[in-house]
Image (tube, rainbow, N blue to C red; front, side, top):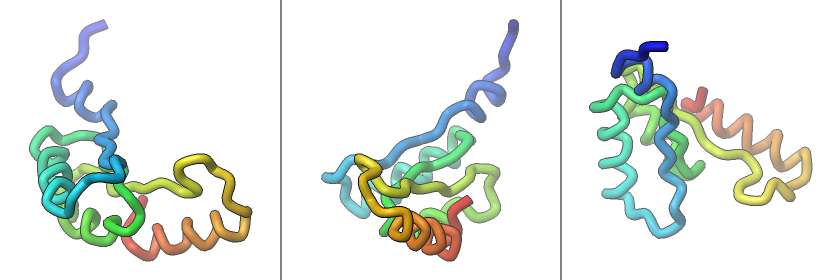
Length: 91
């Protein structure tokens, strides 16, 4: 099989989930994902709305985590997180 750069880039989800990341790190990470035309940016929920704004007009999809990091949240909490993620521009 032979893959192009574009094929490979669209297989990569750029994760920005380190708890020590700064706002500047998150901004730079979103812009890097656009520059490389990754498939998506997976970002901390509190920053998803800004991530969606940065990615608007690109083919990079904004995404986030639900029940992160262990998934031990109740189903009701996960539903609330998912609704908020969609409202904030997550796809």
